[in-house]
Figure 1: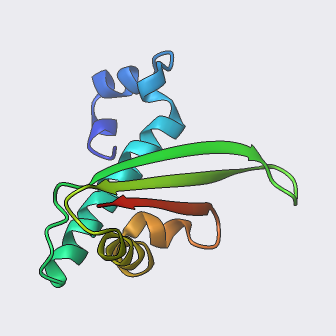
Figure 2: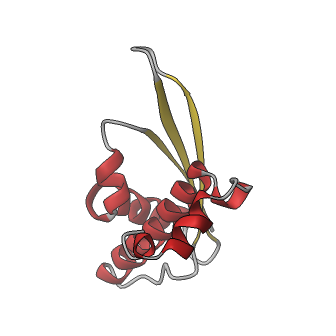
Length: 119
């Protein structure tokens, strides 16, 4: 986004009325899913497993917080029919707890749930 802010054309594009794919939650979900996919692939390579075919879906919701204001919640679905369930779950846990920058940034601030479906 820093590069985009350098041109008025980009600023206008992002300032335009929001379509579903440009809603802030959609942009956050796309970034988180892509980042988590890279983290999962990295974790897989560290353990000599191929997690490159995994499909990551992030559903982001917003709602009231107990302390006032609003907060986010994220449901990450990790699916890979080529890896056994237990292996995929272990890789997803490692990616979430140790590797993914989005997971690090949201920890303690955003409720993130993992739903893992392997072979």
